[in-house]
Image (cartoon, rainbow, N blue to C red; front, side, top):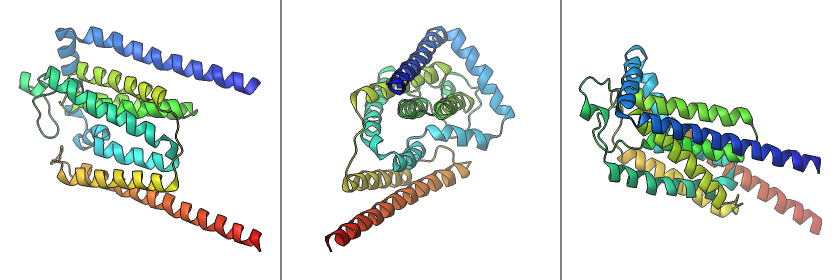
Length: 273
């Protein structure tokens, strides 16, 4: 009884912290929507990229890319397969909402407004608001926040999300207001998916089909996607390595499942003798 009560208190505290973070982001978003504040903060952050390793910034910002992050998520799903449906629902929400917002606002990116922008990677000019990379990484961090009791993991992923979001300004791809709104969208969708979709334990066959479909989708997407950082090939190497690692983890999962089934079958055969 005491353990159950403690668990409920901890859950309420975690939810309170989550909504506090969302509230702070909303306040920052209101402040940063003032054009002077937005541009001043942008140039203050963007100029720092001149003093930082470009390849490192490219690697950090790429963790908000759907393919790279998809491979990371797949590695996590190999350990927590019951999250598969919730993750897929959250990704579906994001794939619908973020492009709709980008098309609706069609906000110019920094390079289209100013010439004195430090840009790392392929130049982009349109559909700035909100930041898709930031929405994706905060979506992932939010989903993990609600499914783990490890406080260090929660805040480590949120801190990583902050780094990825900040890197979008450092590489010259987004305004600060794009990044903050991306974080709000990602965290909100993660909460919505968590509330709507419970943990679902799929059969071995269904899990294998879901994982295989995701792997195939990641590989096809990577082959057919233009590279964001053609001058930094290490980004592509790391991305392919993560896809390969996710494939290995899924193969390991499948092998262990097969061995477990064989063991249970042999145990039943022995009990019948």
